[in-house]
Image (cartoon, rainbow, N blue to C red; front, side, top):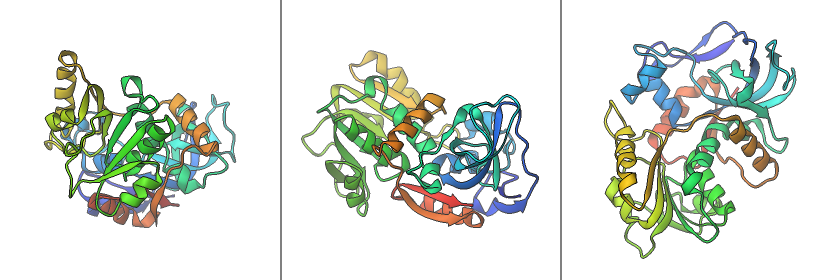
Length: 322
């Protein structure tokens, strides 16, 4: 089968389209014939091995799994001996191990049946970004109707779904994006838009009950100034910061400070959870959320897709078609 393979950490130039052996599913796994795969910042982290501290999990000197890709959608090609929830031919989506390939393995608990109203491309755009958005707006950061929510990085894959979910919960949402993303962010449900090139998030009169920061570049004190005295701040992912720790150092400071202030400050490193994937499936099937696709690339053009991501400001999710 054909797959996008990487033997060493580094830039997109190291990605190669190769013929490799088709994976064989373990007893608790499903073999998926991949039709589409999502491209998001987690793929960039896997490719570069940054922040360096993540290599303790990804592989110290080189990637443990040389095939890139994390979320995908397709048809079940085979199932392991202990899998009872799926059968060959089922259309599924979720977290796959190496989804930038014609076939990928996935634990059965990390897949769900694809909603029939979603294309494979839309379904592939949903798992990682959708679960991150769900987990960001949870606990003390779950907005109540009428509360004000600020979403920084609102035009990206996670940001656009965070805007949709917060609006669905009844919040008044303000999205922060670049100068060309305003109309798109409003189309996702935002009542207000801030162009970060022209206005600071603390410039207006509003203070927000919940802030979800997907961009990772703003200092913690600035974000706290935009937050109500009892508000909740969620720092998503490992963007920004040093090469070694990335944005994790800012998240660590937030966690250490949180017990001593009235505001709830936390960092989120999203984890795949079957219950969250099922929630996304149900919401998408009911038409309450959708994963917007910025653009699609064929598998062979995966390096170009990641370079487009690196340039910033995609409107929704970038997807590979296979």
